Length: 236
Image 1 (tube, helix red, strand yellow):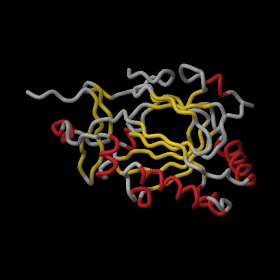
Image 2 (cartoon, rainbow, N blue to C red):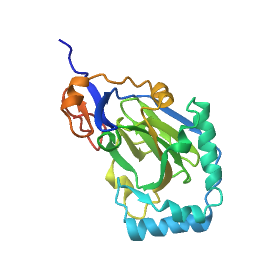
Image 3 (tube, rainbow, N blue to C red):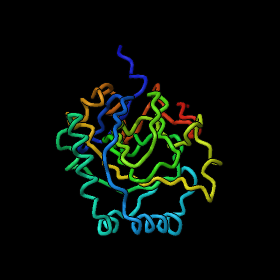
């Protein structure tokens, strides 16, 4: 009798749920992107403080269509990430992937496999260095967030944005008055794309029996919902 895998992501593929492995691969690099214009940054800061009201650990969308009007180098940013992902063997997947503009005030440890199990994230950070790192505890990777930091990773892999030098997420380190927001572009790369699956080492259909009885996306650890400690990133 075969046992279900210890850790698996179950995601929508068309109108069926499909199973896959969770990758601990993190692809990271630096791309050369110019600083966004000062008035665009001021617009973001206004939006973040007045409309989003970001609390420590929050990750929220910013209006991308409005930003593009005031961002002459937006196309340059997209081209730089596109060139980088192509160098990883991802060909033209970026061009056909959904993109969003996001802001975070740090981020508690979490995975996004219950919402985005059918995707990998590709992120480009456009803010200056605020003394923050993105931390992938399972992969043992910690990457400094500066303007031009680029990442590709499995949405189901636990991650957080924490203070450089800290060992976990601490809300007190993101108190009011601290300059600690990061703005980034994020693309949803389809995990079923052959190049994406290969780059992250994803194995598909690892637990078809469980897939048949599920009716929503989720990540399971030993058959139970895989939840992550928001402060440490450890599975609970």
